[in-house]
Structures are given as structure tokens and as C-alpha cells.
Figure 1 (tube, helix red, strand yellow):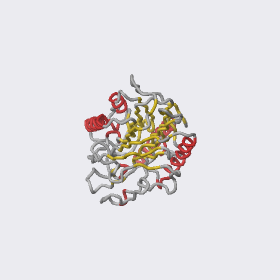
Figure 2 (figure 1 turned 135 degrees about the vertical axis):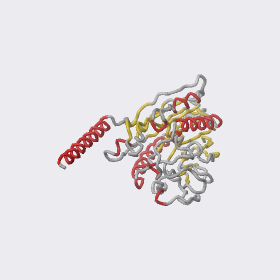
Figure 3 (figure 1 turned 30 degrees about the vertical axis):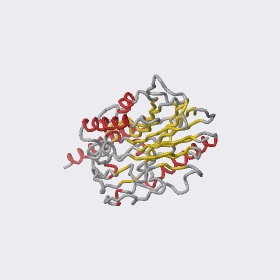
Figure 4 (figure 1 turned 90 degrees about the vertical axis):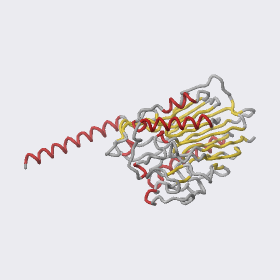
Length: 357
């Protein structure tokens, strides 16, 4: 009996030692980007326009690392899976995503959740493949998730993750930067979470002394009550107002992880139990700067819940992907493409705008 007790004690000590070493290693190697970091182009076209015209089109799409198609669920949303069942699933989704983008090439393309080297996407370098396809675009990439080993779920850990957000543009920017959002989770959860950011890019405008500031973002998703999201939005608001007050045009695109202003929880029909919907929050009241305009398609969802594979009319759906433009930008059209979440748990959204004098 004493022997068994001693074995259990030493087993516990060894386990705690391994856990302590793992947490120490994760703390030492945590990804800590600077507040503002200049981004170099990952791809450049041979022929390009040096200035943005008054009318142009934009597309935003969270591609869900090509691992969250309609047949998948996700453990953080109430499902059980941490990655697709095999590499072929990811390859199929990457091909579908590329085919859609190729047939809907817009002047600006904002992407979120693009993996570079992650176990969850079987090591496929998605950003490299997409940038090669978009050879006529300037490409920029900002890491927002870099962890050596994500230990959850315990039964099938996510493992290493290297992922980020991407911007592709037909026009040559004169400056592109990665801006870190403030706020983070408490230790040790912060060791395995995303380091949220946005890409800000600046362009000359044809026949104008004003500049265009184009932003691609991806806000936090699982912060209880939206505490981090509120900090991020307040930080973003200061940035965009500052740029607009300089006389610039400002367009913000991406995955806001807040239901768009005017969209309620029951905007679309669903049967998902309410216990899975705590992460979906309304946009903060009175946040939108005076005169600024939202652009989204109220007729089509841009996101589906991932507690189970997608079944139309059953899974919760809502709108969290869209655009915010400054008062001097005119919205000509906006459309969400209803792909039935075939390649990602998000649908792509496009907008056409005109820069006013």
C-alpha cells in the first residue's frame, strides 16, 4: 500500500513538473508583437496603379483557416472537433476559396483566419497559396495567432498555430502597418490566445490631396461579456477618427465579432439552444462615430454557429462581417454571397464605394 502511495505521489510530482515546464516555456516564447509594426509586401505585381480611383470595390471574408466548412463543428462553440478529420478536407476548402476569390476579384480583398503553418490545417501554407493566385495584387500579412502548442481540447489538442489576417490590393500603398489591439486574457489563458490586431494601409487618391486609409480587422470572439471587444473598439475609434480629421477617407472591413448595428439575435430563424449563443453580442450602443455609415447585407447571414455541422434553418446565423466608412465615402452597393457556408463558417461580403470630394 505504501509503495502504491509513493508511486502516486511521484507521478503527481512528475506531472506537475511537466506542466510547470510547459507553462514556463509557453510564457518565455509567447508571441509579443510591438504596438505598431511596419509590414512589407509578401507579393507585388509587375504592373499596378499608384493611386486609388474614386470608385472601387472591396471584399471581406473570414475563411476559417479552410477548416470550418459546413460539415464541421468546433469545440469552442459547443462542438467536439478541433480540426478537420484529414488534410484532404482543408485542401478541398482552399481550392473552393481560391476559386471563389478568383471569380470575384475586387480592388481590395480582406481576409481573416488565414493559416501559415498550423496543425489544425495540416501545415498547408494558405497565405502562400492565395498570394500566388492573386499575383496581380500587392499582398500583406499580419500574424495574430502564433502559439507553439495549444493544449485544448485535452482529448485532441489543436497543437501549433500560426495564422493571421491578410490584405490584397490592386493599388500600391505608400504605408502599411500592423496595429496591436489593447487588452488580453489573464495568465495562463493568454499564453494560448490570439494577439488581436488590424492592418492599416494608406494610399494616394487620383485627382485629390486626400489619402485613403483602408483597415482590415478581426476582433476578439470568446471574451465573456465582450470586455476585450469593447477595448478594441474604443481603440479603433480613436484611430479612425484621427485619420478622418486629417481629411482622409477611411474604410474599415473585416470580422467585427459583434452583431452589426440593427441586427438582433433573432434576425434569422434558428433552433440552436440559447446556451450556445452567449458569445454573440450586440454592437455597443452609441459607439458609431457621428456621420459614419455601416454597410452590410441584412438579407443574408455572414456567420453560422459551430456547435454542430451546418443545417440551414437550424444553426444560428447572424451578421458580424461588414464595413464602416467615413462620412466622405458613398456606399454604392453591398452584398453577402450566400455560399451556405460551404468552405468556411463565414460567407464573403462585398461593397462598392465612391470617394466624395
